[in-house]
Length: 217
Image (cartoon, rainbow, N blue to C red; front, side):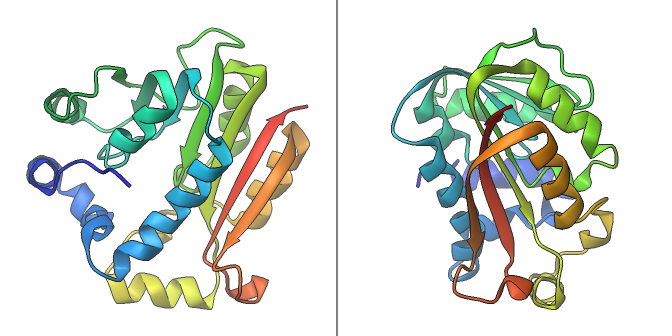
């Protein structure tokens, strides 16, 4: 999987200390990176092998996976609410990601036309949104009727709490909702095509992450 270079990652962390708090560097660490990258891998498999015309990346964060995600679309629009977008724009320019455009944007009020995107990528974002119902409505609004929509979120249980403590993740208490609430709202608005849990071999009460592929009802 192609990520931004570690040199560029350090530029982001130097500018935005929140990226250190959110354990962005763990995408590059031995062993730990497996758990970070596995959720991305699940989402990419659900996107499939086709190339989309317009893909929306909701909450691109440090832009770590944009080099890989850029392979799946002619054009990517990325939105996030942090204040260091200019730094990441410069980095994606250095990474030669000419089909990626980033801007400040809030998933609660997307500045895109109705029925615009044929793919939407939203991993590890909705758990931080208090008004997740409005966020899902906005995602639904800007998606075409046949759009491929990938949504992923962490699961809350004793194992994930322990895992957060091991990696020094301090922000789990910022999660504004849980998997039960999210899944119920997703099922109201979308038809679930595929649902994957990680690790799949653990009992559901101990799994760490869920990724779903959905389309508009």
